[in-house]
Length: 52
Length: 372
Image (tube, rainbow over all chains, first blue to last red; front, side):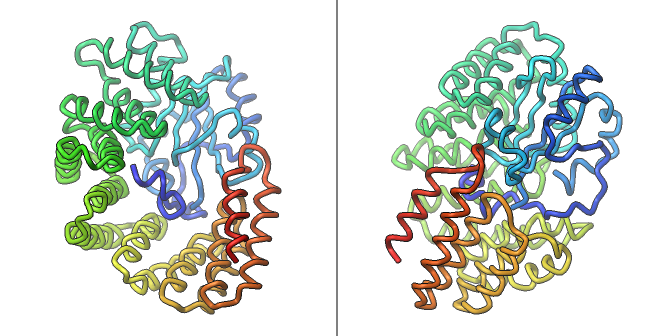
């Protein structure tokens, strides 16, 4: 639980992803994701993350 | 999750069932998203009903592949329409959490748990979510009490991690209630030591940190030190096991935390230098090097590292790096440069858009400026 308070140090993820993701993420564009989801009639999965 | 989960082929079959959106909360392009869907835990996973533009499912924290596939299935069910009272209350709790209505969210999660059918597969998530919102609302006594009540029902499952760890975090804020703290500490240790629970390495690391926090709350420095040593050994083992540079670097921040707590910042230097070489566009390794060098008293090395980090940094995190640089100037006795750096941090903090701008941060920077 403390991790949520010391967030500047913890929850690390290197900024550049080297391993390939197997699902097609849209980066930082909610409007685009929403338009696609409405068109396909599917929900949006969101991974809200931080680079620190 | 980017290093360990979203790369797993087991997720391929879900690719077309959702639109997948990654939101970097530091990126100003996401300010309006963050105003609509505030985030206080990283990562936070959500499933948004695209027709209603509302949260169908919200989960605070990371997930393993089996957990994620369960979340995806649960989220789809909510979007299609829930049937049971417990499912309806859980979905309401998730929506209220997203709206930052934590008191009503806690009541909804409580209702979901009360209405839970026998063998309800969402009990663990409801228990975790209740613990999180009570922690987030600083209702520490109720948080610890509810976690203690719920722990036996989730023991041996992944949810035990968040319930025991969250409950112990709350109990450590109120250490006078010793029986509750002792029981949750036992639960957290039991969870840490249970090899059958599919915890990720950074989950186990988080449990160590919470256990150390409990020992610190009880002013047991010897016990805390023993755990810090154990934590450092664990993290070094996990980093050694990593198959990629990215997986190894996941542990950098945890390792820096424990090395600083052990007053051995020099142990962090080789790994951070390696990460700076492996990830030349990432501001984290030089920012962390700045902190490690400053703690070692190597102020010029720290300033150089902070400058390398600032050349790449963006978003709210940049303020923390500027603050670290100002502290280094202050440690050198150069108050004028420290003031100038804090003034720069204030200007930058004030320039951030709604959703990223924090009045608390700005006030704290202004207060700091007065002390220089």
